[in-house]
Image: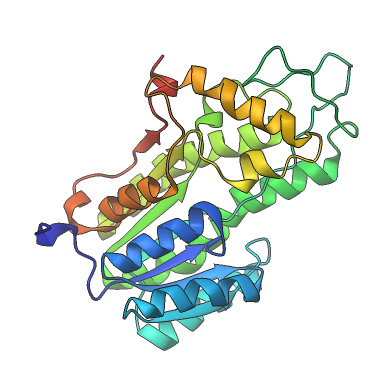
Length: 279
């Protein structure tokens, strides 16, 4: 029997980027632990699939079609949640995307995961590429926190969980915008934790390592399938535990950070990476 301090019964959680990958896994695991879920993302059809699975668990679920780069849509997400549930207990800032490319194409690009594999890129990182990643990850997290924090302050309670990446502290070559955004999220987590601590709001961060998600591996347009397979195989050499992570394992950590069991924990970045960054 699970300790009651890890239960989320009666809690309401907003999860951004909930339509697939890490966000979907976290949303489903939080629901399994007892929370009602507001699933937010840009694509309604994918969100319908997530909410269907959540409702089959006997939990309530609300769709909030939201682009986190638009403040009005983020504010509507928060308002819709309060109107439906009357509170917001948990916010998971997970929305993100990647468009891997070097700042300047020199012909000597390489992957930080597989130094011997030459990569071909369509061109330099554009200012549009840079702005899109920074606006989604960094400014998007800011918008969500700004929209949700007033309700949590009113309640004098809340859990904010940001999703970063090990790329914020290791080799992020040819992915400068992504690496910079994740490093920023780490520091924003610490700063916001201090700001909101007087209101009994905990702010922590999950920094995943290597997981089989589309954003990091399966949708790299400059890789053919054989290169993806090699990339995954070679990356195992960097993981002391010798395997890629399971998305559900990120959900377990999110449950802990969302639950009363973590009430004395704030401002922390937890690197769930199989030991990669411990080396």
